[in-house]
Every structure is written in structure tokens, then in C-alpha cells.
Length: 276
Length: 165
Picture 1: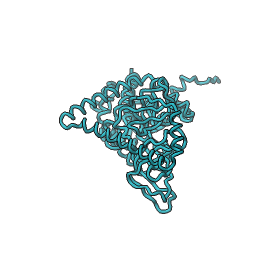
Picture 2 (picture 1 turned 135 degrees about the vertical axis):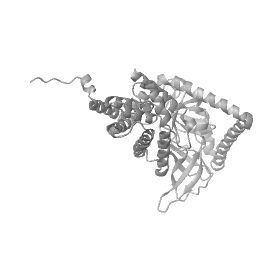
Picture 3 (picture 1 turned 90 degrees about the horizontal axis):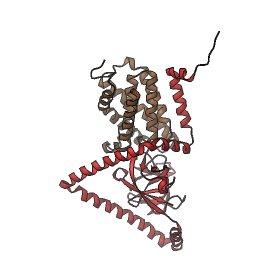
């Protein structure tokens, strides 16, 4: 009796074997460490990035054109600019308010804080958004600046003086930004009015939730959340979000608080990356 | 040539989904253009071709999405296999069947994905996640007629509807 070992090409011809092989490859990819996963993703997607940029550019140009046509009748463009300015001033106001609070309470600490900030060499890199996440339950964007511009993982991304997210992977000319609304995002924050420390957590919707807000914390609608110094990866006092709803359930240790991020990601086309 | 067509379609879908899809959203509802491709190939092709096409579709979605690499490949291969296994009892040429199957399996896929995300991050609220899943699945099913018509245009040899052979 003659026995022979089936070759790989014969094995792959069998449909069930193809299913098993592909599932095995997927499982192997699934259990790879995130660092390798990001490298593989970046390497595979790099050739598509120029196309992605071109598509996004054309889409934005077309959108801007239609906006301008509309503004001829409705003056939308001017209103939009005014809204943008108002948002910027509001965010600046929150930042100033937080700084004033700190000055009032701990003058010495703030002096040190200012001294530290003078010493830290930060560089700002402007970047355009060239892509969005394809999944409904994850929130990330792709920007057209990468390691060539000095960007590295964990750098902070802002827009209109407010926090947008952080860099999670960077290749030569592009980087992926994890937004604060992503379910995997956790940002240490502080409530400006009550000084409570909180964690701002994304939940794949347009809102975020605050974790670990004690029952006794007196939060109200409109309270502002800024980044805290805890953890050290975010510059302090950057506006993150505004409280829109809070509820204390019977028997719960913490309040459940819903906040609205300061930056509406669907309405911006460019961001700033803060490089430490 | 068929694979070349498939990869061209996949590239176009990836570019559209990753750049312009947020311009046609209704609140949290965004259509998933990859999923109708999975359903189309599960209806149209044999098991091997269907599996490979669905794996690459999932892999493309993984590449343009944050999260574990391979998770969408697994889900798409599994969903494609299920659809393929009982496609003979369906009247595949009818638009209502295509829309219903896309809607139901999109729900299943999104629930599986949400379960995976919840286990990983513990931060997805049940009610809003269910609403996102329902609205996205409904929107995905609504774009099926247009997408299937386009896919059919690129597959002259075997048509599902409109001059079915």
C-alpha cells in the first residue's frame, strides 16, 4: 500500500482546509502583541495612504465647494467661522478659568508648574485628517503626519485648544489617532468647578462617560472637564468635555456622568499634534 | 481577472468607508459597505472562493480600523460560511431576501463584534450600543440594492438578479 503526504497546494484546494487555514491565520494575527499588529497594519496600509489622502482631499474640496455655494444664500460660511471662533474663545476661557483657580489656591505650585512648562520643549505639528475608522464601534482617525515629522506613540492631539486624542501608531508619513470617544480610551481629567479627579472614558458614541466620580461630588450640567497632571502624558488644563447629564443610582458607589467632548470630530479637517 | 475585480472593489470600498462615509451618516448610523460584499460573495461563489474573499474583506476592514488584527476576518469568514451553507433554500435573486439576510447577519456580526469589544474594554453601554448596532445594520441593509447592482455590473459571468442566468 502506498501512502503519500498531501502537499500544501493539494490541501488548500480542499474548501474546508482553506477555511481552517484562513481561520488559523486570523487567530494567529489576533493573538499577536499590539505592537506587532500596529506595525503590520502600518506596513500594509502605507501604499493606500496617498489614495486615501487624495480621496479625502477631493471629498473635502467638494464639501467646501457646496458649503460655499450654500453660503451665498444663507451666509452659512460666516456663521460657521463665528461658531468656530466662539468655540475657541469658550475653550480658552475654560483654560483660563482653570489657571485662575490654581493661582488662587496654590500660588507656589503654579509657579513651579509654569517653570516646568518653560523647560519642556514642545513642538506643534499641524496635520490634516485623511481617514476615519471603518468600524462602527471603534473611533480613530488617520492624519497625514508621522514619524518623519517627529510624531511618536502617546503624543497628544488637539484641535481648537481642546483634546482630540492620542497617537497610537506612527509610520513615515501618517499616524493613527485614538479619539477620546474610542472604547479603549481612558484620559485622566479633573472637573474645573469641583476639582474632582475623574477618568474620561470613551464608549463609541458621540458622548464620553466619567468614571470614578464619587456620590458626594456636586456636578451639574455645564461643568467643564480638563486634563489633569496625573499620569504625566497630557499637558494639564486642556479642555476635554462638558457635563451634559449626571445621575446617582441607589446603591452605586459612583455617579454615572455623561459628558460631551469639546471637539466634534466630524466637523474638523485638521488637528495639531503636541510633541514632547 | 475575477480576483483582480474583487480587489479593485475592495480597495474602492475601503477608500470610501475610511474617508467619505461620515458624510452620509444619520446620527450614529453609518453603513458598513464591507458587509454587503460578504453577503454577495456568499450568495454567488463556491465555498473556497467565498472563504478567501470574505477573509480578505475582513482583513481589509481590520487594516483600516482600530483594534485587533484578524477579528473581522474571523467574523466575516464565519458569517459567510453560514450564509453559504443555507443559501440553496433561499430565493437569492430577490431583493427582499438580499436585504433581509444582510440586515439579520449584520445584526449578528455587530453583536459579536460588540461582545468582543465589551469583553476587552468594559466601556460599551448596553442601550446605546444596541441602538448603534440596530441603526447601522438597518442602514447597511438599505444600501444593499445599490451595492448589489454595482457588484453585479462587475461580475458579468454570474448575475444574481437583473438578467439572472
